[in-house]
Amino acid sequence: MDNYKLLVDGGIPLKGETYVSGGKNTSVAIIPATLLCDGPCVLENIPDIEDVRVLVGILRYLGAEVDFDKTAKRLCVDPTHVTNKPIPGYMTGHLRASYYLWGALLGRFGECDVGYPGGCTIGSRPYDQHIKGFEALGASVIDRGDGLFMQGDLAGAPFYFQRITVGGTINIMLAAARARGTTILHNAAREPHIVDLANFLNSMGAVVKGAGTDTIRIRGVSSLHSSDYAIIPDQIETGTLMIAAAATRGDVVIRGCIPTHMEALSAKLLEMGISVQEQDDAIHVRPPVRFHRPVDIRTQEYPGFPTDLQQPMSAMLCLAGGRSVITETIFENRFLHLREMLKMGAHVDLDEANRFVAVIQGVSELHGATVTATDLRAGAALVIAGLIAKGTTEIREPGFIERGYEHIEEKLRSLGANIRREGL
Ligand code: EPZ
Image 1 (cartoon, rainbow, N blue to C red):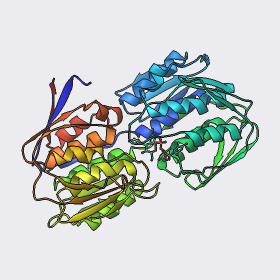
Image 2 (tube, protein in one colour):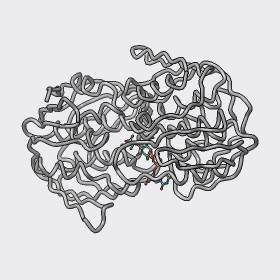
Image 3 (cartoon, rainbow, N blue to C red):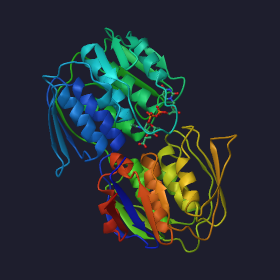
Image 4 (cartoon, rainbow, N blue to C red):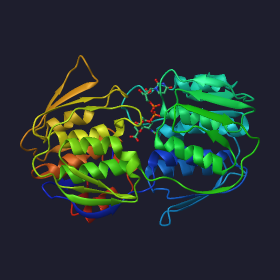
C-alpha cells in the first residue's frame, strides 16, 4: 500500500520540450551483466528508478562495490569481491528482472541460488524457456520451493526458444558469454535492449553476434574486462511521452530518444491523424487537425507494436472518434487498467471469453474519478487518462509508476501538466 496518491487535473494540452531517461529494461539487464566482469565497470545514463535501486542493493549484498551518482546518472560497479551467496526471495521478489541474476551468476560462478522473481501481474509469466536454455548449456536446475538453485560447468550449445521471450534471450546470453564454446540462440527476441546488452557484453570483450535478429551467436570467452558504457534511452518512456502529448492534443518535443525504435507507435499515431516528426535524436508530436481517428492495435514482439505501450495507448483511444480494437498477444492479463477507466466514463467491452481482446468505443468526454494502478504501465495509462479527463483524477497505488519512469511527474509538470502528490 502506498502512503500517497497522485492527483491529475485534466484538460491541459502539454507543450514544450522534455527528455527521455536511460532505459529501464536495458538497465535491469546490463546491471546484472556487470557481475560477469573481472574488473570495475562504469555505466552511463542509468535512470534513478526503483528497479535500479533494488538491483543496486542486491549487488551490494553480494559484495560488489557500487557507487550510484544519480545526478550524473553514472553507476560504477566493481564486482571483484562478489561472493556467490544465496539471494533471498524478499530481495528478488521486488522485480521481474532479478531473474537475470540466474544467467549472470551461472555465467560467472557456474552456480546460483536465487529467490523467485516478482514483477507486474500481467500474466502467469512462466520462465520455462529460461530453464530449458540453462539446461541446454549443461546446468542442472532445482526448484527449492522458495527459489531456484542452478549448477553446471557451462558449455555452449544450440538452443531454440519455443516462444519468443525477451527475458529468456537475455538470460541465456548472460550465461553463454563465459561458457566454453559457442551458443546459437534461435527464435531469439529482437528488442532494442537485447542489442544494447550485446553491445555492452562485447565492450567487455565478449563475442556476441546477431543481436537484433532472431539468431544470436555467442562465442564464450574465459574472462571479461572493464568497460565504460552508455545505455540506450528508454523506448517505452519515449512512447509514453509521445502518447501523453498526442492524447492532450499538445505540442511537445521529446529529446534524447531513438526515433527508429518508435516506428510501430509513430505509424499508429500518424494513422490517427497526429503529426509525428522525427529528428536525429528527438521526436516532435504536434496536435491533430481534427479529432483522433480510431485505430486497431495488435501487440507483437519487436519491431511490432510494444505490449508495454498498449496500456498508455488505450487511454487515448477512449476519446477517439469511433471503435478501436486492442488485441494483446503477449500477456494474458493486461487489461486491468480498462476496468479502472470505466469509472471515468470510458466505453470498453472486455470479452470474458477472449481475454486477449478489448473493444473501445470512443466517447466525447472522460471525467475525473478515483482509480487504482495495478501495474507499472497501467499506472502510466491512468495518468494519461487523468490528463485528458474533465476535472481531477485521483490515482491510488502510484508507486508502480516509480518503478519504471524517472522523474515522470516533474517532466509532465515541465510540459504544463497539473500533477501532484498528496498523502493518504
Ligand atoms: C520483458 O518481460 C519486460 N520486462 C516487459 O516489460 C515486457 O512487457 C516484455 O519483456 C515483453 O516485451 C523486463 O524487461 C524486465 P517475455 P519478460 O519473456 O522478459 C511468455 C514493463 O512494463 N514466456 O518476453 O517477462 C510470457 O508469459 C515490463 O517494463 C513463456 O511462456 O517478457 C509472455 O506471455 C512488463 N516462457 C511472453 O512469453 C518463458 O520462459 C513474453 O514474455 C518466458 C516467457
